Length: 378
Image 1 (cartoon, helix red, strand yellow):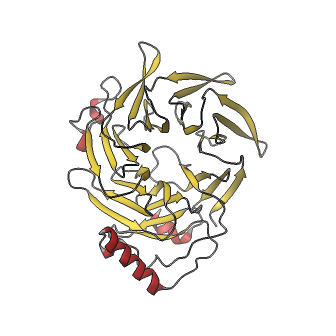
Image 2: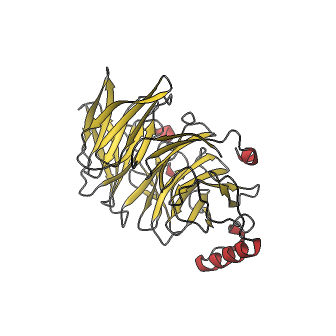
Image 3: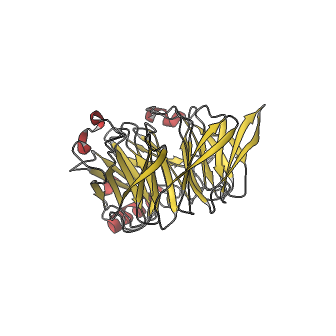
């Protein structure tokens, strides 16, 4: 078991975020509030309750350098919270949305943040010094359904989105008054704001969590068809793989290194995926299970091969050797995991600790330090 800390904070948690030194934790207990806890003398104590939204808070992100919290909500608004003295002071961000805001993420340099919405729109928000307020520029008419997840490339320009129209897209978010020209490299070198760099049509079902690898060379996102997709060499000729598994769909994904990925979702147990020396991705194991049970190599291989034919996936794209597992039971989480947050230093190429939260109201901290079978991938 890699879980080192298990905390039950509420009946249900929709999202969570940590301060840079991990001494404070912010989460939404499935309502319009954000609760901030601090670790005092070995116990978690509630310090603040942020009350400004009118409906469920669907996204939280805590900037490491500037110590600002950004929240997004179904009330179609976003707030940036600044700690002034002992109080968190909110600043309203006008998103100009007519549907719920569903997710939010600070950019690597923390001078912008992106908000995905049910209005088929992505808002790129930045601080305007002249007028002393946060403004937003919209990427419109690109998605055919709700934007469920956003992920920033390390260059601070490219943004990946996942949508319930089944597609993953990559956009340029270059804003002249915010971004430096030297940051425009690769496929985004000559692109304008809102220009679509790439559209991936790998999934025919809803797409959820999307994330870049630490180097930005690989992109991963998950579909509601119990598949995870990996894309290398993002550009005019990307290389794509998809891995099918026999368990419930995933909701979010996180790169621990260039070759190791954690997926979390409806199964309530983190799933480990890894790439071998050839760059072929496959399922490795459930992270929270105490003992892997096998249902027989013959069945696992036949199932994977049949699934590959159904989705047009080459046989070698599946993990026919390691797909021999049964549904994991008795894990740390008791319901769907809907959020995964890295606990490494910002910009680090490797993450050895991360946290998950879910509909069971738990926040679990996982430590990969003692996972000897995964040491070669970290």
